[in-house]
Image 1 (cartoon, rainbow, N blue to C red):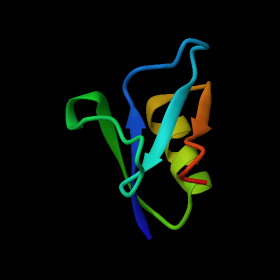
Image 2 (image 1 turned 90 degrees about the vertical axis):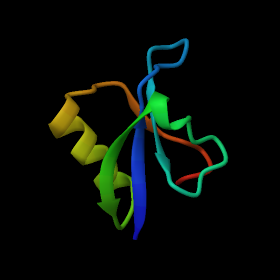
Image 3 (image 1 turned 45 degrees about the horizontal axis):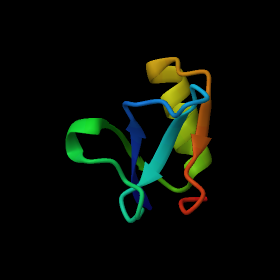
Length: 64
């Protein structure tokens, strides 16, 4: 299980990234939102969709 975070800033295409706590691309503590502890990034994405209603989501390439 890993801790997952949602980036507060969307990229140029308007997509918001989900990152695990071990990610090299993890935003600073002021630029991310804690999602919770999950078994995988798919479950973290489902939580982000339901809790924050973010439609354009992607999992960081190194966190898949």
